[in-house]
Image (cartoon, one colour):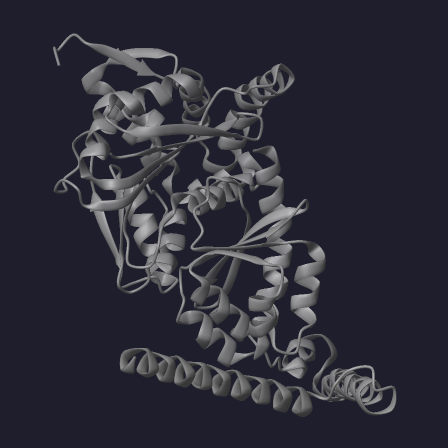
Length: 209
Length: 249
């Protein structure tokens, strides 16, 4: 349990930093308030077990032991969690990834949605240190940087998709694949109907004999 | 209890009837500087022990929590946030000075609405049976005269499935740590007490009462005797402090 005490000590700076940032997103704080007091566990396999207590003014982090009863626990490798953090649609990534969810999955999805919608007022975070004018410039720079990163990611993804579908023709475009799938479904239904009709006619012929 | 029964007050042997008043004197004396002294004596680590206690309490929104011997309200403050407006936290302490300090501090910080303050003796808690989801007693049990009666009383007011958590100084598991701890608590603690609260005797009592407190296994057995099940303990800081947990069946 020495580790638990050290773990708690390590959690405090991280918790302070996160809460200091969170307090500049009123919507996130309000959303956390709806889940006040609830406890979520995050097990990064082979690294750490962390608890996240949701409060109406932020979060409280802790190093979990097996004796802590969390309402939901997410378990996965560091790689899985990094992928989740980088995903555009975090809720969808959480459901489809290798991260295991044990407990109240609705709570896990709610927290994921809060993280997804985080919109930090960077000027407010840095203005106490730098002053208003510099904070505005830095905030603008940060937003542009994140915006540029997001746009670049989307552009590269679209360009890659176009190349694979239209130029290299290595994969089928999504509308064609969907059309093909629908055609197969319709054909299967028609075949089922035809089989049923043949069976009915055979039955009638047998009855006449 | 017969009139000539004795108990310990630190290393002193006193009549059972006297201990409560003597412990009360100690806490009346240190109440105002209690938190400062806790931070000084434990180098702030008592806050980490309490965080672990909160995590292991399993408290949920809407729960009813009893913070027994809650003193200046460290745990109550955290529980108040966790149980939210639908829940309730009762901060109970036998000592009116400690309770006043706790009530004033929490009210000043805006913790109101779901907290009640009760002056109560842990040996005969003034609550109905099966009332609380969680009971915590942090650094309080060693000051109770009849610990078995107190544990029985806590078990009575817990709901079935409710959890009792006892955070208390205990026996260090590492011999080196034990030696260092002895030197620290019998030399440095009374000196710090003298400097900060002008009362070295109270801190001499603190060190002595810790040595007289049952060790981890004994306390676990006492909790089982009080009717709790799945009792376990977790040593923290090499056993300087242990967190015991039991569940009411």
